[in-house]
Image (cartoon, rainbow, N blue to C red; front, side, top):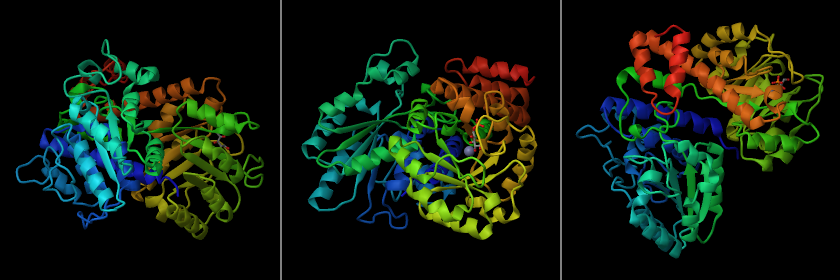
Length: 555
Ligand code: DX5
Ligand code: ZN
């Protein structure tokens, strides 16, 4: 069963937008901590949690306990996306009489615990997990605690209790965002090490300084440490936790407070503050502009693809792009599903299989079974009926559905009906067949023409730019609407994959900042541009964005 990466990702995006909407209407609330746990909640809700929104007290449901209750907007938004109540109800957040208060309350059907008095949610979860054991029930308890909350002695008392009673039906996430209400956790009460200065990224980067896992291990827990914004890592951690017998699991998830909105990221001020209404459209645009970098391993050593996958892992790639060529659809031959199956155990990073093969309908099942997370087939070798078959098979197996078009192919009309449920559209910017070719500049015009068609047909997936993408043109590909970027020769062909991916990200970030201030200018002239820039107070962001705004004559 695939990860269902796109489905989870889409719901997380929807939930994040609802957090922004609801807190901004309320004029208060906690977006920062809602965003640091957004991927964790998304993965729990849309892949693991057993629940029935129509019967919230169903006895066999799994229990989700938000101990860090101030992040209620994150919980409520996901509950709305999951169907507990209409999304419009979030507009009542923090209003008198609403069931959606500043902290979760049992008044709201589906809420398991009145979180907010920090430190108590874990003890409560232990009670629930113990009761399940006594009653011979096999539901699971998922609990999210905060790192500021870990200042409470009760957390550590509870920790001893859970291991004493061998609560393997309890999985705890520590949302390790390094920030609590007043400051950085490592200044207030360090879990890892005292932080001197304000550079929180230091702590993030230096794994040798992380001691929190040792603490929990010494308390008798199964400890898993992950990047809490990587869906695939959360997924793998939960499945390991569920398979662990005889002890409780804590998943220490390194996260970023305010993740996905640059000016909120790592800024303690956004612990408990709502965005102003005039910046909400800009924040939504920023949320819609999340992007992914996908190195293509065929640009490396074809005799040692295992090593190329490892280079992608070390480089922190978002996807691994696998170019399958059969010697028929394109003259060259690379590898097939057997190789993908061999590579699969090397990493949990999603496999983005790009099938440049004839008659994909005959072979696609092999690529599902090999462990692809996303499979893209070419329109040139499909028609409505065969693609329909492929589409349904992939959806049934929780695998992302992609369609690709060659440089001289237009999106065929038969494909329009699939656009609302399509996860990815690859717009080839070279004639497929090999890596290392030059980007075809006409692709930019093609992307402009595609924009309205995709919009009109409700396409909500990612456009992937594939072929000749490099540091010079990636910014313009972003401006065209691409949100996933394949890099063969420009990434895998380089000696330092990690630095190159960082450079790729920086270029996209620059283009995104430009798009955002252009939008700010359109919506509110130089005043809004200045306001937007002024929000970016952490690190050097403000200077960098000001520079772009000046270059573009927007201030
Ligand atoms: C083209 C493939 C691409 C290509 C990428 O046939 O689909 O994925 O190999 O490599 P570069 O980035 O070098 O064009
Ligand atoms: Zn490709």
